[in-house]
Length: 206
Image 1 (tube, rainbow, N blue to C red):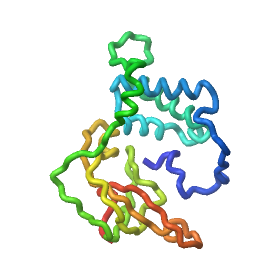
Image 2: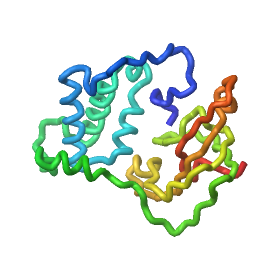
Image 3: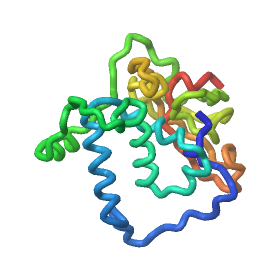
């Protein structure tokens, strides 16, 4: 969706201030916010793409007024409210025990999947990003729509977030690293490259 999270290429927000020696957490509550998010993710009531989409649905004015972990907490409240987890009724949910947190994080969550579909593109192909404006979740940056680049890497097939976020199944799709020229994307007066990982449904032959 064209939500407040898709800020790439937008103007009017000023420069990004880099913080020297930035700490992992700026306040104790942020550490707790991460812990709560992990614990609730362990209940398996939603997947990572659903959680991202919940944050994207925060109204723009509110979204831009919140800090990073405030956005996480607002998204989490929305996920829990949608599933009746804030109404005070007792519900039996899986529990992510403290002893299992470190092993779970170390294991990670691989998203590569098998598919019978053959990839449409190969390394070296010129591709154009389709001008899509989906109503649901997407991993397609708005600033790349309509731009042309070159496939430089093939990542195999992965869970397709656009489907997974809607509870419509994993629908594996081929994923490519595509290289663009910054001057072609942003009109920059230099020869810098810009790289993005893009799913096959976002692309067409150039």
